Amino acid sequence: MDHPRAGSPYYQEPLSYPTPPSTMASSSMAEPKRSSLQYHVDEKRPDGPSREPTSNSSASTIIDGKEGHNSDLEHGSHKDDSEEHVDINDPKRPKLGLRQRMHHFTWAWFTLPMSTGGLSLLIFAQPHQFPGLRQIGLVVYILNIILFTLLTFGMLTRFFLHHGDFYRSLSHPREGFFFPTYFLSIATLITSTQRYAIPDNDTALIWAIKTAFWGYVVVTLILAIGQYSFVFAAHSFGLQTMMPTWILPIFPIMLSGTIASVISDTQPGIEAIPIVIAGMSCQGLGLSVAILMYSHMVGRLMSAGLPNREHRPGLFMNVGPPAFTALAFIGMANGLPDNFDREMDGFIDVHLIRTFAIIGAIFLWALSLWWFGIALVAVISSPPKYFHLGWYAMVFPNTGFILATITIGNEFGNDNVLWVTTAMSICLLLTYLFVVYSHIRAVVVQDIMYPGRDEDVEDH
Image (spheres, helix red, strand yellow):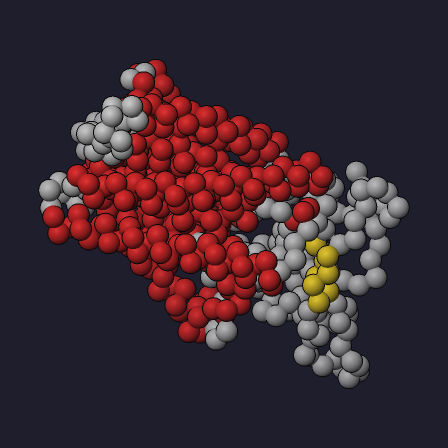
């Protein structure tokens, strides 16, 4: 089936990204040709290549599996048409050394510790425990600390080897949106530390985790304001290019509410109240911005259709905001002191607050379920062919969805719901293992950390 032709109501000109001319001199000493990378943004077009003739060569992209177009591996420039081209989707393409590959070690790698930390929290929250399960969760928690440390050193190595990459990574119209995953990983470390490493009634460690919470709130608030301010000033995106990654800058501050729901119950008496208030404020901010983004997401889906198959797993990101908010509502309400009564008149007391928290959580859980269904149908109808780090969106947001379901099931004491969450947890574990396997394989065969194959290229 052909792409829409010029003059069709669905026809849209491709976006062009100019690349520098090749620096290799031809035998005739002719001036090198200047080409451009072209990416179609109308995702309602079929995955097959367009039959429209083009006047210049364009780089092969993962989106439509185009054949190679004479691109220089490191700089994206094009050689003379008479020379042999390189197809980035060809398994026999040239292999690169570690230094060159580190240039494509992106912020999206932190989706790995982010998802691993979520898994450790899910193991701790399982309603049906068996001997040794908590120890398995502790091992996952320690593994997550190691992964986070190694990836942090990996990013520092990239910036040391390739000067200027730090600013380019933050300002890039695609990779920049993955910078918040670094702080999402920190959020999972804080909550997992509370669950696995801090014993009850340890005053010093309880004070330390409270300090970490307030520091996290300040830093992520600056991130939420600063990154969106930069995006508004430096970039101009069309509605048809909208992707769920646009939600990521608000995600870290939103998880302040989730952290508050975990640590507030361990804080002594009155000290839990300011944590709950701050957590509720941050959770409300995050959910409100996410709702604004949802309107753009639905508009994009209605006007331009589903994303290309390679990016459809990213739709699961939409599951996260309402799910984590539902989890935070109940957790923060339970974290209030049992004798909390604002007016001391018995009217608005902690029991009424907890009741409304459950009502709000169920309301938001349904929205999360709807987005889960949309994403699941989209991925099953057209599964991705090439691994992307965005596949971890099938893990972390769904972790929040399962945790919210477990929490609601516990509040109602419904064992049937809890057994369903156990089955959901097993499915999530299998998904995590599959994504990790695909991740390792992609690194080994150079399907990622390779020019044109990572989040440092615009392909949607």
